[in-house]
Image 1 (cartoon, rainbow, N blue to C red):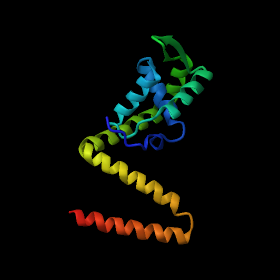
Image 2 (image 1 turned 30 degrees about the vertical axis):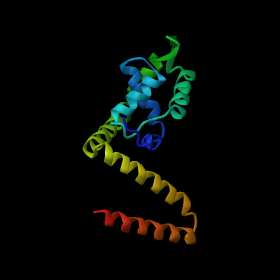
Image 3 (image 1 turned 135 degrees about the vertical axis):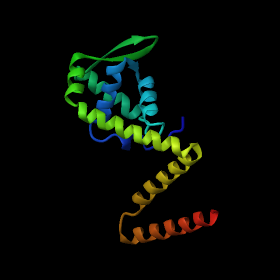
Image 4 (image 1 turned 45 degrees about the horizontal axis):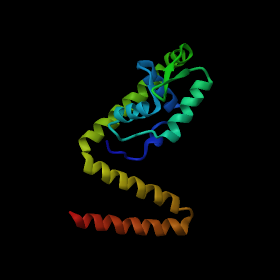
Length: 157
């Protein structure tokens, strides 16, 4: 599956926690499997990596929302009653997460793999532009560069 690289930005405050609880409410899983399931739900457009998933799983375990056990050398997580209660109390938020993931997935399928790679490059350029444009002088320079890039891309047609 193609990784877009904007995964952590997909999940708004506390949503990754709910998404993981939701997946674990369906069936137990180890961290890698949960990351794959998150990615599949969005058609590969919003993956969550180990640097975000494992700390959230640890927090959920510390709070008694999930428990883990070793299986075949991997830590397998399963939801607890406290996790189910949290999930039930936030059902509307969970529905919104999966509806948004479904829209992203549909968008990704319509784009095709080449277009998703272009979107990934656009994302990297956008991020770099926002970081670089720290003041008026630099913002003007960034806009000049982006206008030049747009012109070059239009020439490709």
